[in-house]
Length: 427
Ligand SMILES: *Cc1c(COP(=O)(O)O)cnc(C)c1O
Image (cartoon, rainbow, N blue to C red):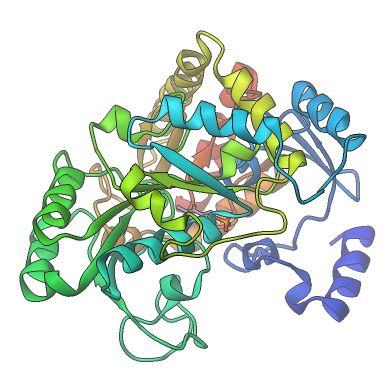
């Protein structure tokens, strides 16, 4: 470790557990020392020791227009002189809500919170209050933020052994199901359907690397939820506004009851939102069953950044251009994998993609497939990529995040460097 990073990180460890505010920043899943950020602009990150990286982490997907995008910075700067948090409603809050509601058929109304975790927590609260049931189904390997309910152990009490679980949760109401396994979900509903408040699922599993849903997976969930009076919650914290202007539900032909957003819609500022059908959203109105509030909910800085981001994404051709970047990445990776004889499989939807680090030409279907990957190889590849000047997610269970600032050159150089780095490890 070079000097400045080491000094800062050692100091940070005195005041902050592990020196970080969110665990993946330790890089403990990949090895190597944590990067201490100096600045980020476009796709270029510079650390405190002056090392430069081309970024393929994109703020874990929250950055979709490049770092420090001028239009967003200007909108935030303009708001800085008008008040940070005043505890009053704003026009820009109404505007951001309008853009999301009008672009997402599954949403009649929505509210802003400050994180994806909060959005998910509140959606679940609404589902429980509406159904007067307490259990919910989530899928093995998924991650929906760190709200208590979502992190409960699916039986037993051994912290961290099961992905996305923790000790310290008072009540465990989680029923686990395998992703892409409609038959298992059907069995769960046959046994306990009338106790299930909700099923929560990611449209694409983006916390298992990148796993696509089967053709009928979401429709099956929708049908079971309808049959048993449970709510269908679509966690679009990653997918929202990533493939089209609005939720991906409209693209997949899925009609969820509640949808959660985060990441992209804040333009890089802290954000979450939950929305859905009027009859469910009505529950958070004054005097009704569900309470939700927040000092920073809908704060003007986030609203300014979010509006600026969505205005850029609403421009004609934006999503076509993002898809072209994804297509270029696919072409370059596949060509380089062939050239360097790499047996791993690339999969993509729009600008979101992942590589299965296992010797199979098939897409991964569920978390068992994910766990078959060669995690040791990814560790070394991650480090080798850092040395070549590229930042990838510090976990194999994250996708490759493209953003609007990526140039063809960034993508071409990344694909070649990645193939070379993998080839070094598997020879
Ligand atoms: C990141 C994420 C969350 C949590 O959002 P935070 O803003 O980190 O609280 C929820 N669901 C999914 C699918 C996510 O990827």
